[in-house]
Length: 100
Image 1 (cartoon, one colour):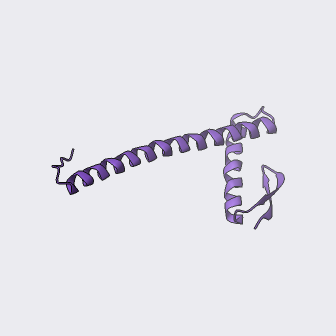
Image 2 (cartoon, helix red, strand yellow):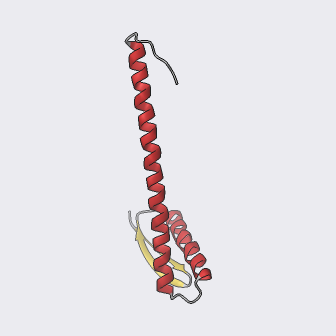
Image 3 (cartoon, one colour):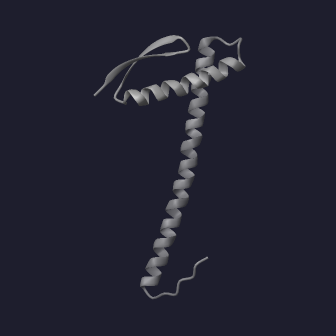
């Protein structure tokens, strides 16, 4: 069930409607707030909008890099599993199996 939450990012009050738990929504806000604060400290001359947009880009970049790394890991795990299934099949058929 969707719930409404009111939280703030660097003093800006925002209302959010989400099906996620309040704890999850707070963690999302904290993540964004930390990223905005980091960039605001580095770029004191940037506007709030610029800092917010750069923060979004940084978080999106981090998320995509994570997804891509998980895809590589998933591919490797799938390949190893298929190799193992092949070894087991050959063993069950009586074909000599060598492990490398």
